[in-house]
Length: 206
Image (cartoon, rainbow, N blue to C red; front, top):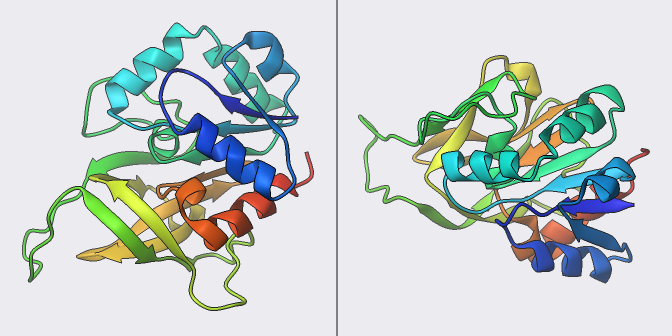
């Protein structure tokens, strides 16, 4: 069972509907029993890092999430703020993240870069796979995804960078380590490209 973790933030219905379009049912829940029985987890999110972590902690399921992600090692996909929460910390606040990736979330800065780069970065951007990342389908041309963000994930080791994009500079827009995956963009808003990525995730062996 795919469980979309409900902690009050994120396009929960949009993600579930996109999964349904490609033939997969998902449960939206913040209940411990549902999360314990999940074979895959999606951690969504829209908003600020600190409020996101506080809301997630308030659900009382963080220990169960750690158990599912780090001990049972079921496939997990973080999306947008959910992706950032999987890092250690953020420039956006003081709360500790989940720390599943050796990475931190940094505010995008463009000092010394020619041009005008307003924040947030909103719109469709090309995305490239790194380190042989298999969930990103590049067989039918360069994938494009929809972004809305002012912060990005800075990996402490390049090996965990799975996807990159460009906005003033090249930045990591996806991280991957074993069963853990995350994407800064919104696959649920990215039409055919989003469908392909979510399908690849849904087809991973639990």
